[in-house]
Amino acid sequence: MKKIIPFVLYIFVWQSAFAQKQLASHQLILPGHTNDVNALAVSFKFNLLASAGWDNTINIYNCNDTTFKLIKSINDAHRAPINALKFNKQGNLLASASNDFVVNVFDSTFKKTKMLIANDGHVSNINSIMFDNSGKVVFSGDDDGKIIIWSLETQKKLRELNTGSAVNAMVMSNDPRTVFVAGREPIIKVINVANGQVQRSFVGHSDMINAIEISPNQQYLLSGSNDKSARIWEVKTGKELKKLPVDCWKVTAVAFSFDSKYCATGCNDGSIKIWEVETGRLIENIASQNYNTRDLVFLKKYSQIAAAPMLKGSVDFGVRIYPTDLIDPITMGLNDASKFRINKFQNAIDSVMKIRTLTKQDSFKFQIKAFKSSVKNTNINNSKIDTVKIYKTPSLKK
Image (cartoon, rainbow, N blue to C red):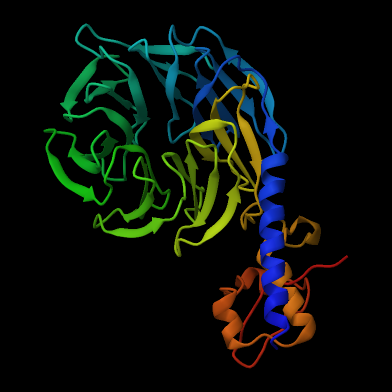
């Protein structure tokens, strides 16, 4: 028994190092940009990835399966660097915000249909953009702490909110009466859209907050700050659930997977970490790169994640695509064994099972959980089960 423990620990260390090296070296750099990339957006409905940055250009990629095709470059999108992109929930409209103080909206053919600008509009860099849930209203936030609410129908300003601090990021929950705002202050404000009053605050960070994202299931809020931390909050109560040990100086980007099961954090040293939301457990680590991670998105088949890089001493401009070892239970073909990807914990468990039966202690050590019933009903392979009913993902062999 004493010989087994060092053996398993060796496997964990070796595979962890290998996975990190593999993720860092097997990246794909998408063509089309001639300068740094600031922003990303995904339309899951139409399998589109949009990117924009310092070359004032928006690139649109078709991202079916593992292939990426540049289908449109909007070279006249703005007259200054683009800081933010967002598709509406329907996936047929794309909004962009820039240092030229203008918000543009593009239709499903990528034609500019709306130019949101007013005489008393933005007079400083616009850092954040989003649609409301109906897709008929656009919110934009700037360096002066101003949030403008625009009507897409009239292209006019509906309302202006003054937050008192530069707006770095905004998100909206299913409640159309409020918007979540983060910026230079170390708090996340929940602001009433009608009167601009702060209804409540998420308190815990000690420095400027760079990015926030709400989970698709509306249960969690993820934030990244200059205080060397990322945090998972409960949307309903504002309670801090997890403080993620990101181990970097500044967390500059955050993202949720489409099923809210995983989240990702990106740092100014280029490192990217993927976490299990429910437990806060680190799943994967992408090593530091020669760039500042400006934005992150999971792709629909979340075996891939995209990063927007601001490069350091390099001219290899373009969105970075990294593979992950996450298994997508929705798009994965359960009857096709070749589509299963065994994570780095699986091999360690397999090694133990070659020697002995799994025990209750193993369930805590490896954090083994019951496999989905839909998988158990498929005759892929027979799992080994011990007396305390511990299930594991089947080890698949051809």
